[in-house]
Image (cartoon, rainbow, N blue to C red):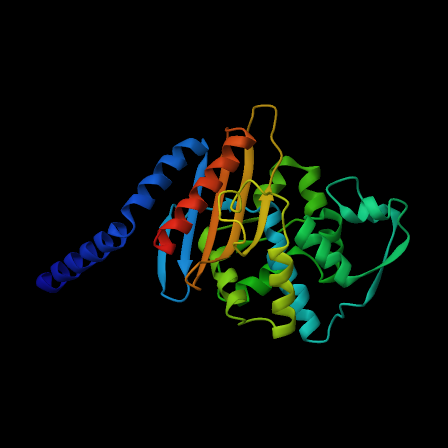
Length: 296
């Protein structure tokens, strides 16, 4: 019995050593960038075609912010596939539903009291990070907890969603109620890439919108070669009077030159660095990962 236990410990030791021996230069850079982030940096990378992965402080819980608009879009499109909703379905939007926030809907319809299609709300939420569209869609699917149940039902357990955008804006502490891990988001990216959840039509539409998202151009996209296909969704919190920023994130599926895909999630929680420095951490990390897995 003792001999078997010893063998198991030795095997586990070599497995751990093998995992952490992979991509040593990239791991070293990520460690340095973690210091530069002045917060908690979490990273998960996977190449679905080869199964190659890299994890850095993935076990912590990271504030999602607008990254949660990606799983919300997945659920809405799933309900479209199931016939519960329609993309051309018109929703009556009152003036009271349109708050002064990051919102293309607010800019287009400041007076409210208009009918807006599910498609328009979805596209604005994904590509422009529209907070009003987000909350309207959440109301349509019966709230954040329903999104959590949907994601948990996919086998992703490290995912919690309790409040919408307007509720987060009303209370600093509430944003911490929406959290996940980088690997959970990469799992969703991989499911979208391999079309495991949505119909081909819905899946292609979501990926198209994510490839047209440019709300945080100085993060994952910034140092990548011109023309690289990047399907991403980011999330950004406010910064309090002490200089604390609870959430700075970007997740993406990047098409590599060899045709493989790099699914990556970079999340920075509770950082005291300014926005330029936080963006630079994500941009430099994405560039290094792109070069590492492209063989450049």
